[in-house]
Image (cartoon, rainbow, N blue to C red; front, top):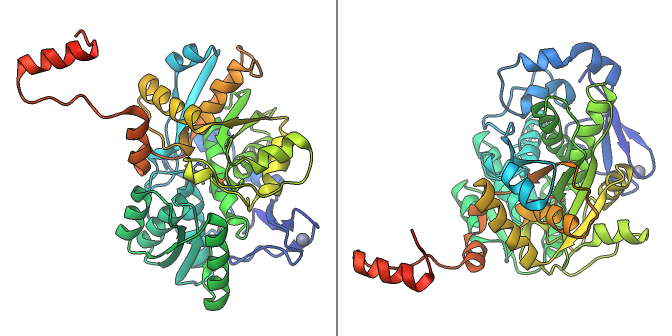
Length: 412
Ligand SMILES: *Cc1c(COP(=O)(O)O)cnc(C)c1O
Ligand SMILES: [Zn+2]
């Protein structure tokens, strides 16, 4: 890889050769891939990018840690739409707002960016089996992307994982282990199994290539905005790998001179599970919390990427915000009604955060803001219906329809 220098530990600074099956540092710290930005600048320009017809995350290969000879994987991951949302901006009292709908990836979440990357690296490593533990989306995403590449998967999910995600897993032919315990328990069992059988490891915070895949969401946002830097990018946070990846992508663009300033991050967590935000707010080391929220994808009591995430939020001069389940479900309605975008609870938590920060007066009205919707609402229909209610029920009879309209105060 001509563009990569090494992998460096974010904790102790020790450097490693960037081999395909990298894990964490001997000291337990997470590794970060280090690039040769001078080289990248010499081979990549905005004009070159603009001329590319490849509409996926692989349009940024110069900025990705993959061998030149490695083919792009099968599924079309990335280049999700960035919609301007004027009606929602008006309702939130914001200058300009965009929605990046990453629920439109092949397995319907942003996790596909990491899984696609991991599939390439597993193939480079000559692996035939990949394993991970996940709150659900990393699982279904890995299973789908691996299936498309002909690789086998062993996947550990907590028993609470919503049915939509489990259905995906089964459909993709993964060997699924539903762990009766918390996400923390699930992670520990997967770790032991991976050590025992030597599978390729897709666990967040162990495999440093995950955030390199996820960073493409940041690259795309800026290219889709024609390199006009927004003031804020809001995203939901669980393990912290996603927000750290987003930040890496933005910093890459700054390092190669494509943008001349950086947005601030908005880190949105559930009030019932917010160890990363709490650490940023108090300045103290993060401490485990209960996993007490219906936003299952961000119900992470022991975050695996806390160090990188906390550093990213601080470095960006960003904001933290915590949302109750009611506020999260409210944002789901708001996005659906005003934008036609259906996000799962964790998917809309960033948008909920923007709304709350506006109400608290912490986000200026003249800001330009991008909200990343990280997962699709179809992943978890039970919570969506519980929040919004059942539809009006009526036989095929016009008189009864008129009665039902009148009863609900609907005047067509
Ligand atoms: C995984 C996930 C997140 C959070 O990503 P982390 O890397 O765990 O912080 C947010 N939203 C959705 C839909 C996810 O699946
Ligand atoms: Zn180290």
